[in-house]
Amino acid sequence: QVKSKIMSRESRMRATINQKLTEMGERERLKEILRARLTECGWKDQMKAHCKEVIKEKGLEHVTVDDLVVEITPKGRALVPDSVKKDLLHRIRGFLAQHAT
Image 1 (cartoon, one colour):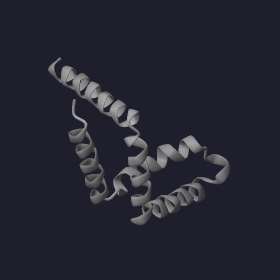
Image 2 (cartoon, helix red, strand yellow; image 1 turned 120 degrees about the vertical axis):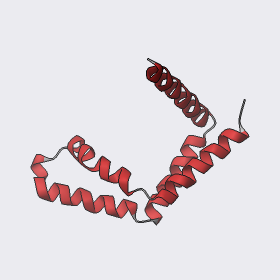
Image 3 (tube, helix red, strand yellow; image 1 turned 180 degrees about the vertical axis):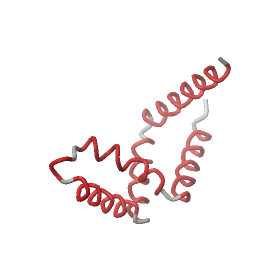
């Protein structure tokens, strides 16, 4: 029960942060920065190559977009460099510190 209270508190906090980021346009700005960073570090090319591998393995006729997303998501998350994750977290913390209510 304590764990579920902590989880619901975390999810409420996450929702509040997300709302604040969205309302102030920061979420879109961060998404653009993330896209650029992922392209710069080669992540996008790695993911494109992985998609091609999966399609080649399973055959184009046997792969839906949903199948592809399920297949590549774990690898995609794992391949995001720590430096990119840390930078994004730093930017979010900075935004929240600036806009604390």
